[in-house]
Length: 291
Length: 342
Image (cartoon, rainbow over all chains, first blue to last red; front, side, top):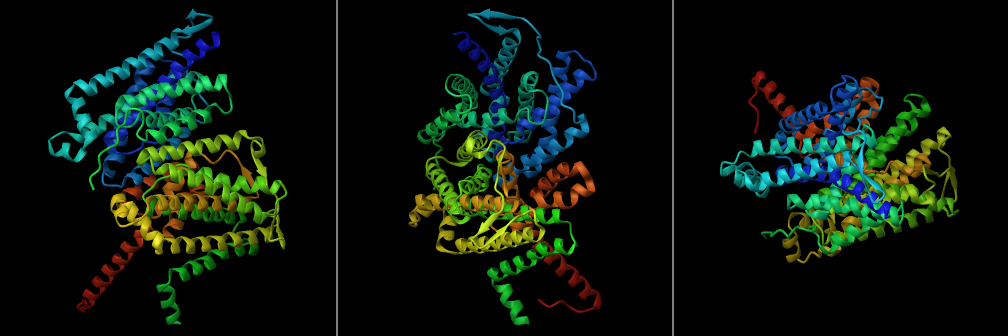
């Protein structure tokens, strides 16, 4: 029972990390029509910034978090203006490969900017927790999970109930028409990239204390985020988030109770099987197609 | 002489063979001491990736389907012959068995693709790639870190060992021959009724179906062919390097392979070689020596710039180059006072 609850708390945190990354991927997929393979790398870049600010400059951790979110915002806008926007007419497959180019640039830049030594980043709240049935729910987990949940709820509220959210939704459903209707689609796309970069960076900061700050810190998270998107469906913004929590719980429990080497594979096969019957994910509908 | 040239110009198959003859000079040059033998290894990589890219091109370019699991199938090729040859089977039987296994997985993905589309299909193939990667690194027969294949005996006649220089050159020649054969095979597939059906399917599935193209048959064909090409690429890796690692067949490699197809030029055959050369060869052959560690950044910038300016691939630089020559010629003619004809 103790381990059951401990895994529950862990899964909440991994689920939040995957959900943050997945929401970024879906946001970009809907507004820019591209699969963003660089989501993890962008987050990693800003995690490096955070680690440098914290360890070399000795700034307060909350200030560091704020500053790295600021740099994430800038990264997103720079990538959109200089790389994605000029590629508006490029075919969808080529656009995905452009994000591979972004990965290469970031990976190549990291050793120059931050050196080759691996860095560390501490938890936001170092110690303390609430004991529940033998397991401890640390204050840090409470903080990270609630911050990510509140942030994601805020984004959903924004998309659903504000004028700018409406602009995002119409851009996602048909960019050409919304441009003709006077929606500033360029700005929408730009802010989507900025938001996605912020979400990726938050995911990176939550992972950093356990995974360390290195080039591959978000590799697993990114792949899981793609899977979460497929499980929940790319047509809604909330689908991927629910998919992310489902994957985190399913994976952690199968790894613990069934097999630690094959847990992943079981979950992947189960999702593939599920996908065969619901090809557009949990919340997706079959899009209508004109002949 | 000119009739020969004309013949070559008209027949792509002859062009492929001529290309192979040119490429095989790379096998001889290291023996003469003109180039380093590490250069030959880079060209071996280029040949291996070109074979894989040719198959991926059938999928991506001609059928409009995407796969993020290509690297997994390359791994299947290299590790497959490793496992079967370590069991004591002859090389040929190992190749046949490996191809059978991966064709079966390819057929499975093909069947799956009938239900699932676009990004969902892409990520479904990523699932397969991740599962394969997990299997390679966890199952005991793959030896954890990798399998040592050792000298390969071809048709029970000659045994080639890569640690001996002349024999390594012979292996390189085998790679070139396989590349030329695969180029001709890919060309034949595209020019046959199968190729036309694939292209019809990529434009509009409903229209293709209305014309009597069976989606089931041709999706299966596309996926099985692409996986077979990737597996053959992996087998070539096994033959040349005589060692099969378990950990390098990841999403990044699959993305790189797609980058090669896109950068080279979708729906082109020589474009695949060009794309592999630009994405993989350029950084290994020149950039690492000239720029050092910046080569990563440079490759990234190169991929982005090429896609922005040549969205249909670098093979089309040739067309622009011809146009430029024509322009220069007309300028010169004007200066001479000759009115250009036409």
